[in-house]
Length: 198
Image (cartoon, rainbow, N blue to C red; front, side):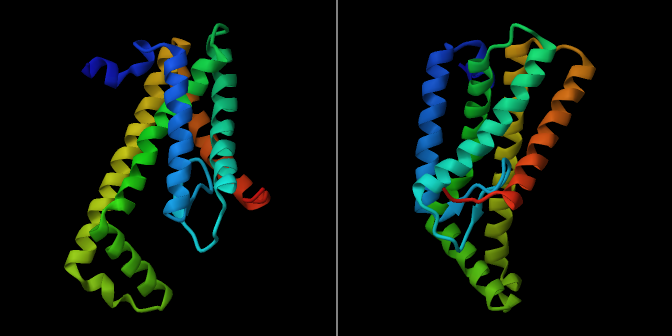
């Protein structure tokens, strides 16, 4: 079971992975609406003052995923001509589940209260809240949880991409890393250039 969790791409059928990935994509986009969060780029989840509709958030999230799929598929084809589009789609969708888990912190009352307190204090230019040890401890824990699950996302991106493309060499690994960095940059740039709403 642990082996399947560490590399689901090697053990589960592509259709099952696709269904799980699409459902997670839709469910967590809806959770983003409930928590007033949005997806400005491939790597960010932000709380915003803008009240985005569910369809706006679905557009943002799908756009970022689409960018990742496009460039990883191109790289996959360069590495291995037999790389299938559905496999790259699954790698991106499944890896994002770890990224979405950060949302769960919004449903823990003490965490939500502390984060809202910090946000309100910063907006009112009152930084005394940052001297409260309990508040800073909660923020620190949330930060570590977020970093951990982002690392898990990158692990699944790598292990999945390696599995479906038969990635082997160091040069190919560096090309993968460069592509991920490019995806993050280009999705961030597009956030500034194109509308975030439909």
